[in-house]
Image 1 (cartoon, rainbow, N blue to C red):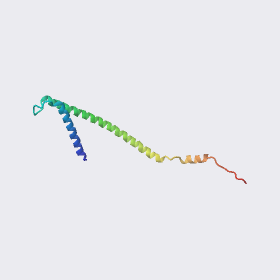
Image 2: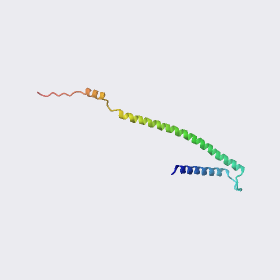
Image 3: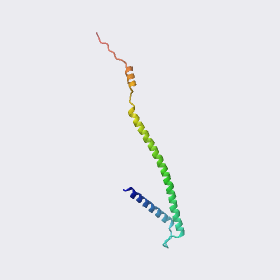
Image 4: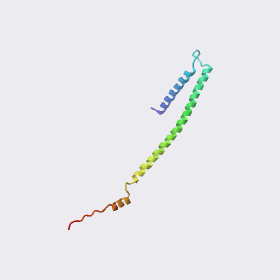
Length: 113
């Protein structure tokens, strides 16, 4: 799905939910075509409360997401460093090999004359 279309769909879904929520909370009188003053005040408070909450939540989300991304980047860099160091490390270095060969006991066999 096109990202712009998906964003529009998410926005409209959110708008519809807020509209339904605030309408259900604030509109009680269906005797006139327009909302009376207490209903208008209630709707404004409802929408503003949601907007402030949503803004605070998005701020926290961005902070947490940034921290997670930094942590993942650090872990990735550590994995890259360890992957680069593994091929450089051999099981035995040349000095260890020669030392281990020298320390092995020599086997001599006496042959009958």
